[in-house]
Length: 365
Image (cartoon, rainbow, N blue to C red):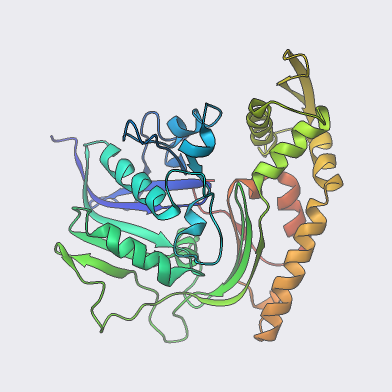
């Protein structure tokens, strides 16, 4: 019992990966939690659910990913659902057993039940996307009624990111988020600064009681100055890699192999001249080794017009910002979020496009 830690659990539910950390009440540093068969690395959980109605027992994270190429995966495998919660505009996969809200609930409940017992959760801090904050918050309020933690607080994602990299309150920041299925770019102004109070989390639950509807509690979010995005992401890059070697690919497992080599080539430690092997299945159902270097990887990205696409999105974003009297000179920081932003070519691109603004990545990378 003496090894138990008591304090705050923070969960940032992402569309591709979810980040989970714990801060003991006696420590200023946070701990990235590892959960066997769920986390892919300390504190990082693939946002995926495998749920078969017959068993009623879901799998999440790594365990769910391992099932994605199994039979009936279009029914039982769920991913890319977070962006659909509280978003009435976008359509979801009608074939899946669960709708996005149900996916989120299964994921959250199973995750909380799987937290190692040595972490005693006194406070739970959750994040919400700024563009669908109202609907997403409503979903979380309902979900929190079934969570036994006495104190639950909510903060919008840009503010959470700004706190993670210590930019001053009142700052204007740009975030570039390249996930598995989407690109999101936005410019926001964080609350506070110039004599105004800093941002605070909104309490949803206090001393075990629902306080989400108390009228005195004003919802305080970062102010959106500009926002743009597209339905493009890491999964498309995985496909491009496989297409480069096997244009008529018929094996789903090859896409997973494409993702693995992409992640390897996204490391800042790789060298231009090195070639990295990947095994792909060919037409004859035989494995063949192909080699990919950083140079060829970047050639694939450029030939598939990735930089042109990013240029177009950035131009649209900066035009929106100028309409609200905000230019790149007003930005305090650029925050890179999502696995896709770790690709060296993309880091180089944003550094060249906006050279005078500091670029940061909140942990974990």
